[in-house]
Length: 279
Image (cartoon, rainbow, N blue to C red; front, side, top):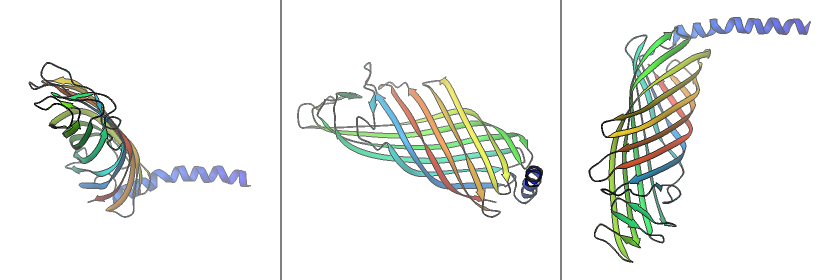
């Protein structure tokens, strides 16, 4: 008797799930005009930087290994979108990462026109702000499932500073005990294409994912980007939800400049937890 009841129960559950999802879609679904996610990004970072002098390549500097910047950091993250139709919406996002460190160098590095020899004490700081703006068009949006394509850009605003004492040479400084400070900033817009999906598993419970990709040379910029995330959302009410995703971003970019090229590599990944407001 129990064996016959179990298949019947499972059949009823699978038959009921689409109906439950559809009934919830009529209450909330995927047609909200505005959604904003506020949260924190607990990320593991692997970053490197190269700042050339005119006509002379600089050293590839590992910010975590060479300069002692934190390899793990929790930072603020904001995401959201505004729908102006059932198929079209504008997606936006912002995050910032600030780090600082101090370390006695274990090897010689060249940053711009400054040379920091092994043993020099270097204080460094890094700030990266990432702003995202994409147009999304839904190939499919049933209220229960959505599949969309993305076109837009992620803009990386970078600021770095290095201050060394000890064995520092170049830029008018030299010799033991000298002090030399090097600062640079770089803003790089990264155009990309992508795709996203969302599916209602149960009323108020959704699975979703997204991927963005770019590889191109545009004017003085060249590089590539792969950004993806996957996670779950649960709505506590019609306008309030919570969610979590695993996110990974891998970026290699270089800009040609008269004062020396700048190249950087970012890789950061980890979980994002957030609160959602939807209207």
